Image (tube, rainbow, N blue to C red):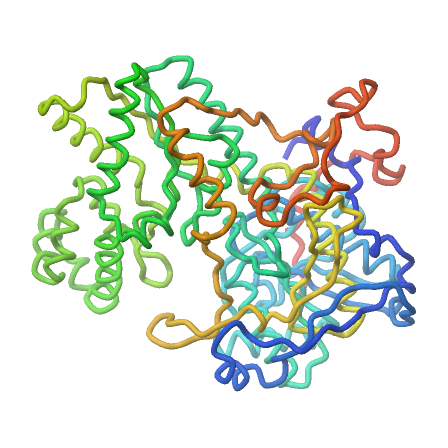
Length: 596
């Protein structure tokens, strides 16, 4: 890729660190907390994780640590979908192990977990990592969604770890990837393998969090990127005053992104999947809700607005959820029979005979082009690809029909013209915000401290994130602490539980108090582009979700910058050291060399 001016500038940014990680390595030790237990299904999980269950959480504190200088050989994996900041996790890990011992080695497995299984990797060098610091994407080594779960895959991974003489493997991923990390750690210990396994909490969806994992990396950047786009559309809507914009944002299993974007931009409507499910709202009720607000705004001569829709909404609507579940089960058994059908009419007739009456009725209410999306190629597990269902177009069609019916009855006198948008990939590989640049670097460096202390089956943890970075608390928590048993593909399996939007939580309650006002009164806020340089209140604030949940420490309340600190310029204190000021060209085909 061609080097941009912004990319060159970002090479010079020096991530801010928790104070403890800025100490001399020999003065950082771990302090153990109490033994932990899983959030549910303790007895079952104890049996599965015989060697790694119940370990204590750890915090890094000042103290003597004579083992920090030992020679290490570490592998790192990028797993699952991209999230801004992944390169900085690797940079923090690289700098940590090199600071400990310059002869230590870091290897990047190519293409995700399959790189470990197949023994395909590249050595991470100074030249390679310096070309990716503070940049978005996962292109330094690539990513993948392979799950290491079969006996053959596990055996191959063990063989790779032995052959490479690895002291540790760091897996950067979401809930599924870190569940995989926990299982891999257990298999390695059970097999008397010295290789430790450490996880890093990654997902822009924001659903990998709990009391000790305050947020997953990438969520901050992605929501700020989407909010910039939504704010731009709001400004356009308020200028043209004649269009309704239906905007779908990522978040299949949880609505954290939609909620955060609503808090940042104050749209007229934001649907929260978890609330839809809790209230058992049907598609018709959702349609009526939207149409009512459109009619109320039209009565004020405001025939425009903005609606935010979470990607996974249809899976939370009762009749759609039932339809999707039946389609998944049906295709698992009769896919070959279905695939022989000639066209959509034949498929519809066949489904009418094989689905339950409620599911068939739900399917028949869908516009033909949307119904076809429920029948597209399945994902690798044979399930409906919900992310490819154009929910925003479905709602436009249903709302348009409802408004026409209301107009005939004299209950609506406005005009309705709609556009649809889907903001997804725009946020996954954006340049990481200052917050994500700092947070990710600290997570990577913390992973090194966990490794050098001999821990395995842990997730790197950095807390107190609404405070300035120097006050962040670094450490680690056992992966089993976040797990429960869930039904997956016909059997009970250990998984890290996804964190859904809590309807009694502070972020949702804050939104709930304001949404009636935002619905009728045009109250848009336009956040603008992510800022990298300038006053703290512009550049260095975490998400509104995190601030509402955790509160802002008094010391962290932003103050207005002095006049001399003009936006767009770094102060002298923030300048990077000379060694990072270079502007290396991005390596061509950096992952091309494969070792076995």
